[in-house]
Amino acid sequence: MDLEYNPDFHEYKIDGKVVPSVTQLIPFNKSEFVSEEELEFARQEGIYIHDCINVWNTTKTIQDESIVEPYLKFLDEAEKRFGKLVLHETQLGSDNPKFAGTPDLVFENAVVDIKRTFYNKKIHALQCSAYGYLAAHNKFTKKTKNHLILVINKEAGEYKTHFVFDAQAEQIFIALVQKWHIEKQFAKYLKSV
Image 1 (cartoon, rainbow, N blue to C red):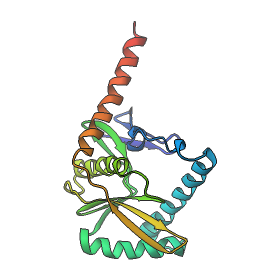
Image 2 (image 1 turned 180 degrees about the horizontal axis):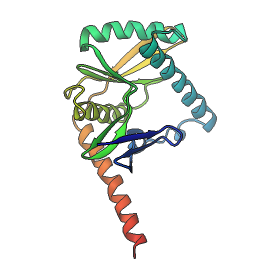
Image 3 (image 1 turned 60 degrees about the horizontal axis):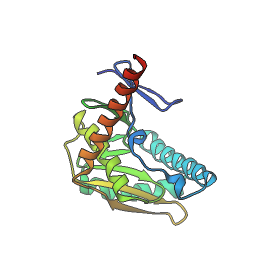
Image 4 (image 1 turned 135 degrees about the horizontal axis):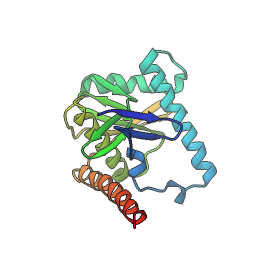
């Protein structure tokens, strides 16, 4: 399986064909709850938090203490509880069913997604189950029920974790992948008429 990622378009390809991303498949419209400006601010802050943590994981450089210090506390606790960190911000793909994504953090026995706020357990469960599926499919870890959301509060210099495992989430997520592929096939079918 040949996986390509184009960050300019947030587009994944497997063996040269576009496949859906984890976040693209999850049907949740945050703009129903906040203005476009608030949504963009939250998106930019989320990117910044992810970048600070990724820089630490990659280079051990502290970009912003208010983010990295709580993350290091979490990392110490998580490695005691869930084993070593085996992946961070790594593009992964699945050839059955075909989809791809970039898990934030994968430990030997946990999948962790980083968020700036906790907003919907069911949506978070779908995302973590998808990343857990990708990590297991690519043999980085075994399937686990330890699906967590890590929320960094940089103002308070604290973190919170929320367990979000849902036994139905993986099955629902796989159905969303299949739906995406069916819709693409249907659109192609209609064009060929």
